[in-house]
Length: 65
Length: 65
DNA sequence: ACTTTATGTAAAGTTTGCTTGACTTTGATG
DNA sequence: CATCAAAGTCAAGCAAACTTTACATAAAGT
Image (cartoon, rainbow over all chains, first blue to last red; front, top):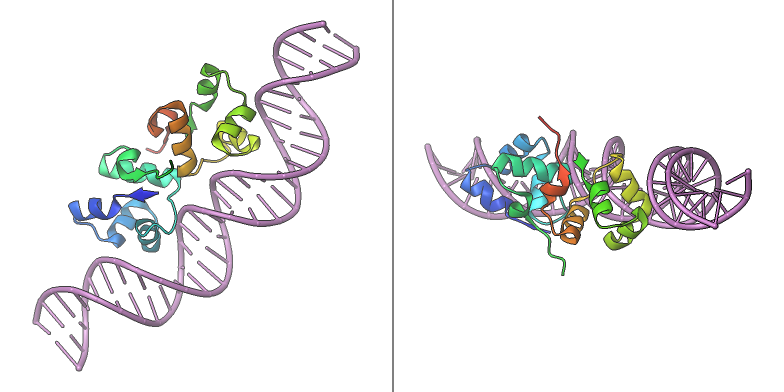
C-alpha cells in the first residue's frame, strides 16, 4: 500500500507529530505508515481523507495486480 | 463504520460465503463486517471496492462527527 | 560545539482484524 | 414436519495495527 502522506504533509506544512495529533494517533504510527511499515486501519484512512478533504483513493493506493 | 455490503451482495446475487471467497477472507469475516462487529482492514476495503467497481466511500461510510 | 526540532527505529504490550471449527437459527421448499 | 442452504454466533488463537518509552540520527541555527 503506497500513500501520499509525506507530500500532503509538506503541502500543508505539517510535521509528523502535528499530523499524528490531528489524526489522534502516535507520531510513530504516522512515521510507520509513511515508511510503509504497515497499512492504516480503515477508520484512520477515513480520518486522513477527511482532514485533507480528499478521497481515500487519492491518498492511499492499493498496489495489487 | 456502516457499509452497504449486504445490499451490494443482494444486487450481485452473492452469498456471504461466495463474497468471502472473492475477497479472500473467511465467511465469518464477511458476516462480522456486515453486522458491524468490526471494520475491515484498508486492503480488504480496497478489494471490495475493486470487486464492485466502486469507491471505498461508496461502500463504507465513516460515522464520525 | 551546543541546542533544538524533525525524523527514524526498536522492544514490549494492548487492541482489533481475521482464521478455523463448531454449533444454532432462520427461511424456503418438498 | 423434515430438510437444506444461508446466515448468525462463539471460542481460541494468530496476525496486524497501534501504543508507550526510549534512544539515535540529521539538519539548522546560535
